[in-house]
Image 1 (cartoon, rainbow, N blue to C red):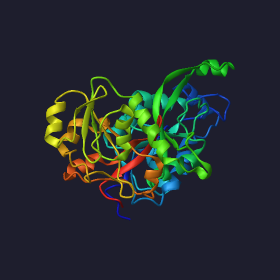
Image 2: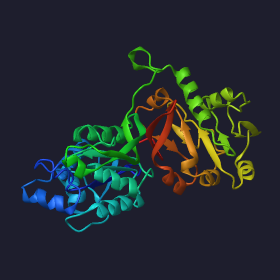
Image 3: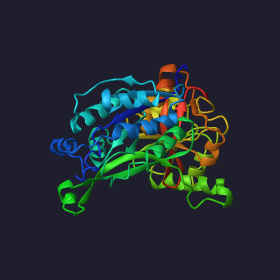
Length: 379
């Protein structure tokens, strides 16, 4: 198959020795001495096989998926055995250690991975906190002895199903998940001593909140009101907000008690209108070098994010803001009208369009976020 230019870029990383001590009674796998003792006792590494199970769920999606991975048992072998073509961007000596997991994770991020699928345990999750932090969503394939961290699917097959949902445009939530650090020596003595180590951004199966009616359908007006309330509760002081066109963002202005240009772009700061119905050049003049963010919605059914009805967000304005300062507001119902197709960007600048592709967080309710794909066409 020919890979689509809008393919999801997946990073695959395996800690080959994750969980190796469990089956032989060592209650952990941290440290070279533990690993060597586990192998001496006849332990069989399982992380590579568990990653294969997860990847098999997307083995037929090569035209929607580009896979980056690390050499040998740290990802390459799992991809090959699952039937996925993968680009190997580096390799580490074998046996590998935590420093190699961190090195590989940083390299996959730098190479453009939009989601990092990893197999490991709590130690691997800690390595990812150190290596990538919240720069990229990650999803854990459980392979460790102890997994107190909330970053794992319930099993490899569940991880594969979540990955398939993302590839095919399913509505998948995005959450901050806790990573726990457990004292293995205490654990071997029967004492559970775990502490908060950090957080990672993790895709999770989307769930409706209290706005659900019978049949699982949203009450659209209530959901949009909750989206607006979530935005307002998180407005930052001394920051310019570019409020784009559309009824969803208009609800934000309505709840603030401010006039709104329904089919234009208004600028607010500290909950006051600074300028109304502005064009691209005026936007740049007003915001200058000050903190600035944008609030946008999408065109229902079509899914256009940029390039239809909001050309005030010119390439220069978008570059000035940066992806991290653009917040997309859309209910699950509106996204559902796309039937799994990605959101579309058409700024008039092909290079910028390519830079905007990938997984974006979508505010879809009160403190409710989804991951959704952005592409340059609806294919």
